[in-house]
Image 1: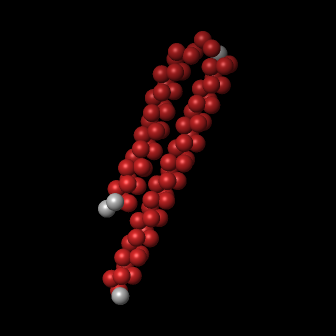
Image 2: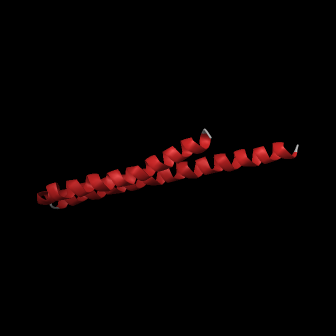
Length: 81
């Protein structure tokens, strides 16, 4: 009986951790949207800087998406371990 309740606690902690990883992925999607909104507004204000901003935009969006991918990999590792 004692080992069974410990297994339930371990499963609950695992699913809670997966939920936290999903919150990370949701917040990352918000920040990627903020990056693109800022880029669009910057280019609309000054179209001559499009080539300069585009490079930094892809780097910033890629780094932000990498955080979401790390969280997704961690969630899968916790789920299937």
